Amino acid sequence: MTILEAMEARHSVRSYRSAPLDAGAAETLRQAIDTCNKEGGLHIQLVTGDPKAFDTWMAHYGKFSGVQHYIALIGPKGDQLDEKLGYYGQRLVLLAQTLGLNTCWVAMTFGKGAAKSRCSIAPGEKLVCVLALGYGTTQGVPHKSKPMEALCQAPAPMPQWFRQGMEAAMLAPTAMNQQKFQISLEGNRVTARSLGGFYSKVDLGIVKCHFEMGAGKENFTWAS
Image (cartoon, rainbow, N blue to C red; front, side, top):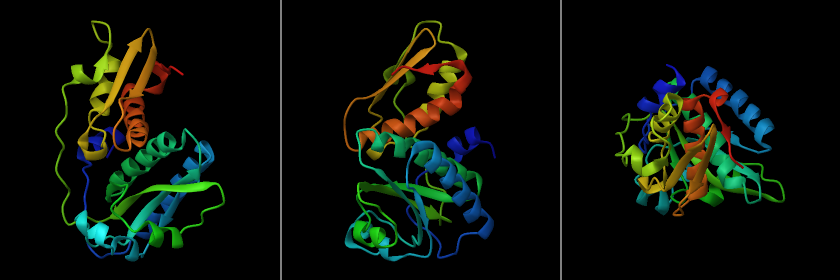
């Protein structure tokens, strides 16, 4: 399965089978997490065999069941932290999909205290959210998307690479499926901005990850 195929196949899953992670898949994820941490200056961590973080009233309210593994998205506090965790977290989500694993972004409906007790969080660092991880009882369902024209601004005719980037961005998960982002093109410079909303900075990082993979990094530069 390619990364682009993973984007199409991956949907949020909240119900999981009580099964340990395949050792090879877990090691592949740990290596990828190390790479993300080095690139992004982050402290993302894989936690396995911990049902307590999802054995809370909030987790049950969020309709989670059987979650025993998760990726804790942690990094140094700062204005860019949420976006960076969204970007690198989604890289891990897509990798997990290629490894036969299911995932779900979780911001509020988990036991943050229980998760913190299983993680190493240094002074000045923050646990923003987690990725539920494991073997789902289902593969989830696709989310509806706004029309491409509502999510971007680009000159006509739209370059093929930009269209491919937008098609990938439209597959990106966002909080409550809000898709509150706008991507615009000027020359070969691409601007992605948040339109506000719940965890919108994390969403922006997720969307930029998808766009970059769909468009090809060699075809454009991000506007600062």
